[in-house]
Image (cartoon, rainbow, N blue to C red; front, side):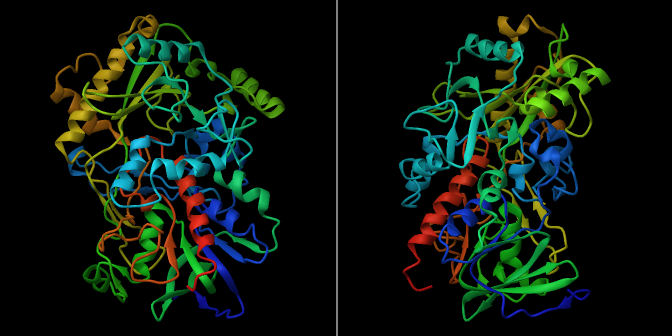
Length: 544
């Protein structure tokens, strides 16, 4: 803060201040500002989302690790991963991670939310949250009790596909899985095609769906490049937000409530810098402790993935369809003129939810099928024809943590993923790799495959497979849980998302999840924003 001139602006005051314009924050800002009598300030640390690469679904290779759009965090040394550090990307733009993700729309299992209810969190069962999923949706493919029409968020199947995608789904059925036409319907188990947050060939980020259509509202102020310093507490109430904006340090006062939607990294960081966290840890770095809440930053859960790559006999993959200058020009022209083709679709059109053990009640692993192969999103596609089966465990038992390292908001956090720390996680991942191989060996897919490129057919024992996973596995970028919701005094927020020990402060993003949902997390983040908005509006007649 020493290099920033302090500017007090007592005249700037709002009814609500929403911190973070990500998957949840855009929803909260939209719903609260729908009432013209309510003033809302939405603060986003990143830049605007005008980059054409964001809107283009196939532009994921340009945005996933772009430092202008991504915080590009990384973990510390991970002991169970042979001492490697993992990338830990989070969106740094309007729309947050929904502007740089793979656009796969999966809600999770009914049992995930019913488990939250079983933890005492009334109002968070599947029956309670389903209406909020439906309210968001404008679903182009499914018109039933599990889906909505006319909502801000367009949900659709991939507009572009390759025959080998159909062969993957058929191979999974040959391997014994049921065909599933809707992973977000009555049941999740099976093989089928993912739904995506894509509207008419363009990415339907939370910003595009919820924020852009209402930016004209006079009672909604959106401010980008606003790096949050801390929430200012006065007599036990969240009274203002201090933030860095260009060369200035500004303060925005809040008449009613401040809603933290800064995500699994940002929300616990801001709480800790504001004096809400473990007292010893905070005072050790010069932060005054206001509320002793040791669980802030704890309970980190994430989906960990291992990728299997198979070379194909013929040029039938996206590696081939995108190779060469003329092909790339044609693909670009098709997208520019018609919003169709390769660039109008995500990279994971189909997948599987399966049980690694017959007696399990629900699927415990997910497979993303990609009709392409690469080493990483910024390394380019392989020069050969290839496909990828990415496997991840849906409900890991390992827990990590995220903590601030300094009172300075420009400092980088300490992130410990603690991946594969439990025997269950290790064993489940090995089983998942074997399941992916079984699908690849099924006749419908094996007829296309010439060789297993990675991990390689020579690795057969559990020990060899686990070592491959340790050496090459990565996050699939679904972190949650660092501001755990619960009914116990140790939880960070209660069932109404209120931060314990502070009046007028809530958290509404994936950090509040007590346990991770069984699938991609963006859909649940949007649902949390929807439900939080209703909870807040219901409290309008109550004193803060």
